[in-house]
Length: 211
Image 1: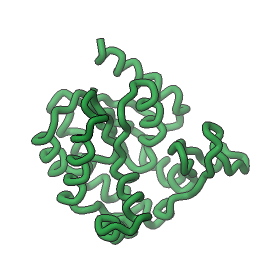
Image 2: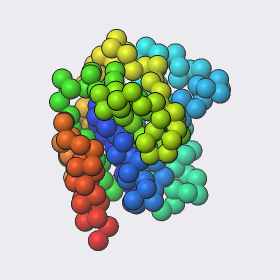
Image 3: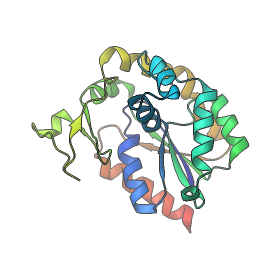
Image 4: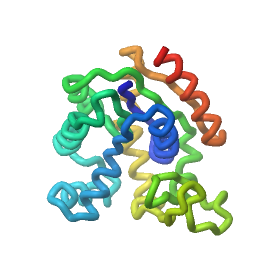
């Protein structure tokens, strides 16, 4: 099962990705996580990626595509995988078409007016990737799932978030039409619904796909 997760920044892709990976035993491939790892280790790719990410811009296609192609060629991806954060442009989608065939594209749809507050209040577990919002943490600093420390990503600030939303609207949103035309899109509306409700809808679709 080869999946793509689409959705604007803050739509909840990371939260749903953790649940999908666990239930369906597919590797969760997040280009954002790959870049953050390289940035932390100050690799050549990390240095290039940081210069773009700090400005809320997309990392150049040739860099991102090379990383994804290398990752999905590994042994743990032979029975499928889930791409989170890739593709982000039509050019990346076309490049992916040349590498592999995708079974389903899950688009998590959220009203843009909700996203700025959602992202700036987001906290992420350093260990398992589970995400929370300050409004629901009640002062907790540990992950309820695994006990890991929670942190705020450096790019989760109002200026960078607005830039990311503008970039998404201009470059990534057209992917919905691209994959709709291919008959691969599955839209699931999130908005104010609990993550469990959104996941239930996704699981119903994936269970049908596997039959």
